[in-house]
Image (cartoon, rainbow, N blue to C red; front, side, top):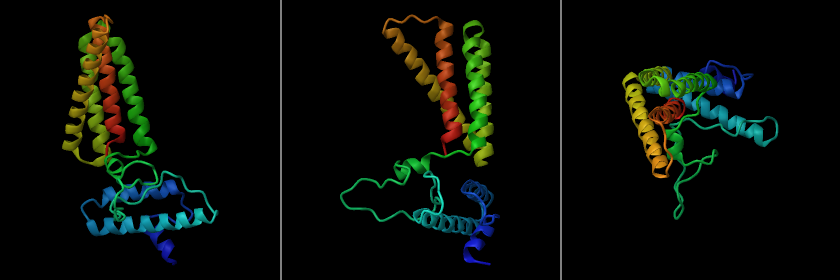
Length: 213
């Protein structure tokens, strides 16, 4: 068995696997071995080795590798350059931002997007006629956020705290926006003002659910 094939075996794959399969396997195994640093380090080392080989093949023009690929989170940072700001990874964003934000898998993005879009539309129509229904929909939004975050990170209390914070931030932004519109002379019915705040709250919940690491 070649060394490269052994790295694929570590991820439960073979050399015919696509990059998306490699990235998905690494993410799944890192979560699975969260309490086993040795196995997690082995997974990340295998992932890094595969990526280095993919980079080499891409440089030689033999394959195409998506530009969004990234190394394992535990990879050592490159030496700092004197007189320059923080280094930018291949994605063009600062490392601290890349560590804070996530690149969700398709399923981790699709279902929250559909859920929060539906809740936002329902809330928009419900707020003007039945404010109690709009509040209930916000409650469902928080529960949906907790569910999706916990499924992704397996940290229930963290999911609750992030969802509650997202709701508070979203409602605050929404009501501030309503006040700004009012100061500009725009008169909004109470129901419409609540609808705007609710929709913005759902947008923040969606962002936190999908993109926060």
